[in-house]
Length: 428
Ligand code: SF4
Image 1 (cartoon, rainbow, N blue to C red):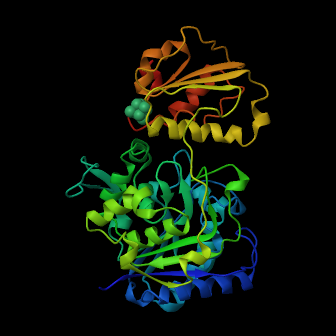
Image 2 (image 1 turned 90 degrees about the vertical axis):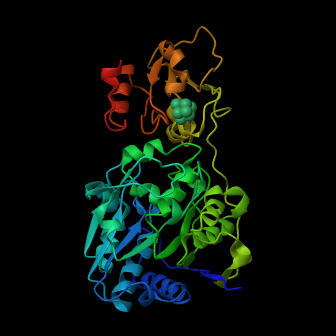
Image 3 (image 1 turned 60 degrees about the vertical axis):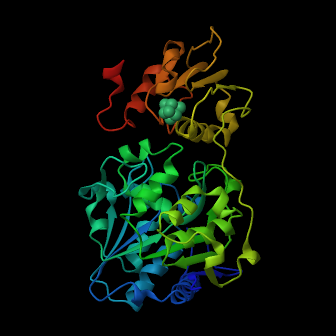
């Protein structure tokens, strides 16, 4: 039986940090990348002379390089250099669309991803929200039944290389190569994807945007409350691993295994992609070359989207709320929980989510000391109890930074994050 090849390269030590490194660090990472890519066929097997090459690299948010939220600039710079030295692309582009609420150009700059790419030899940076969008009907889709709007430059690229950073994601357990396609959608479509069927949507997208080469950057991976955890202990420094392969499903399967997951049973997008014929998620049919997985495997802390028992000042009535509202609400709360003294000036914050949720008749909503948030369309029956933040997969608490704000200020911020065509002021 012919197996799919995935390479894993580990180093005990890599000089420097993502935000501060010198030539010796670059050389070290360059060699790791070369070993990893050569083991699965080499760059020349995916890039022909004159190709337009698009490399997707996590820019995520405008977070400093050593926060570990975005791609490691050491990897970005070394990969650009490797592509320039080993192949002869006609154009070399670094592309991404930052997470919801963020500006990709700013994220490229602050994260160090943009400057590193240009130093390494990229011709240009492409914030995907600025690219032309092509309407695509995904054939035989299982979740994205309506047409989606995908970046023209990616659809027309001769070679697509995905460079995900290894992170736990609170909704999907992992965010690796396959999940990068979530960032190929525009914000509005991406927001609406944050539900229990996100795994299936990522599989649907892989039918259209299927990278020729996937390289996982696991130099400083993230566990726990990813993809943008504010807890310093969620950043695993000096893990120093690169994973590469031509089959993104197999690459992610090996990546998930290194993170301590049972890839087949815990990550539906992987087994679903295999069943759909998009790649291999069965470890028995993957040949791992390089560092044995057992040698570096570590149990990454799982993400948590629940709102119960987080802090004495936080009450939650979750009812039957699903992942979308819980994910965004927890993301917003994590910013405070990572820095609990930030809650000193409030007395209580209460969340109501989900359909048919039992809630006490009397709840005290009196900002800026006591807040009640009614999150998501499902909880609309309680909207008069506090600040109603409508939407499905409501982005309510995501970057709302409510402490110290009036209801009006919170609503103003929230309106900015709503999907296309939605206007909270007109609705209220
Ligand atoms: S509005 Fe309802 S269905 Fe939509 S994400 Fe929230 S809880 Fe789930």
